[in-house]
Amino acid sequence: MADPRFFDNRGPFSLGQLAEIGLADLHEAADPALMISDVAPLSTAGQGEVSFLDNPKYVAQFRES
Image 1 (cartoon, rainbow, N blue to C red):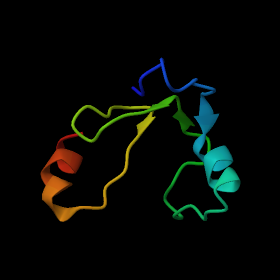
Image 2 (cartoon, rainbow, N blue to C red; image 1 turned 30 degrees about the vertical axis):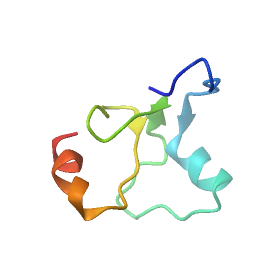
Image 3 (cartoon, one colour; image 1 turned 180 degrees about the vertical axis):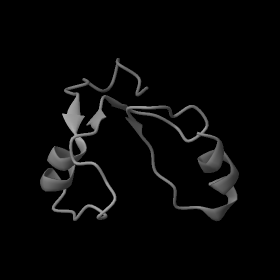
């Protein structure tokens, strides 16, 4: 969860809405109706939260979240 002192949670949003806002294409297996309620670090991300992975050293955390 992002620190609410600095970030105002405006969600939830569907994955389809987020893709549209970000001008992104969803993978064919993605569910555009999936609801995303917040962002979270890889180490704590769960269902309904989105995270980001760019560094290979965090792949283990990705697999566990």
